[in-house]
Length: 248
Image (cartoon, rainbow, N blue to C red; front, side, top):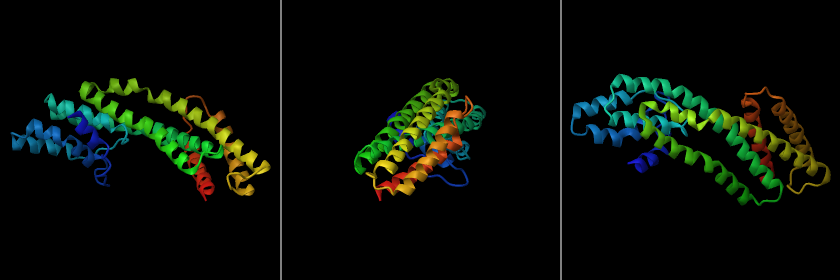
């Protein structure tokens, strides 16, 4: 059953809509569990479907915590009030933790790593492969682990979320991203003044290098304990523009 839920978890965004956001996807993940637990009683099954046919939102990579915990609570026949309370309480932390780590730290860092490899001579297909491998190397295991933790801990899933220590990892990955910014745009400076092996015009190379260096300084000077979300998002845009110009 865990494997089946995991496959469905990978498609949690397939039913995304403006009314329930991830709610329909979460219900689809839970559907095999609900049918197994309440299939013999149509009224109970309809009640179970109704309590999960509601608005829900979280980061898709951390939705496994919610899916696993709710599946465990349905299996343990927890009261509808407790199930509803967990749905309401868990969605905020899962959204904010996931956004800060995956979108604001991990994604820009892996893009910058691929950009650095491209500047150092890795062919285009290798750059794409490096990005895909490094990016998926984290979120796929996190999805599987979060689902397992949710299934094991049920309503106590908060302990599993805390054990992941995402705030601390967000700071570490953001710091690595700052170092990569300095490295990537340092390479652009070298290319601008000593050669254009990447094919980027010197003027564009200098502009990107200056902008990146400024963001590097912002990242170094950012207050302790903050992930630098805005600089990280801007870095992702700049790195994407750089890769676009390099591929062309």
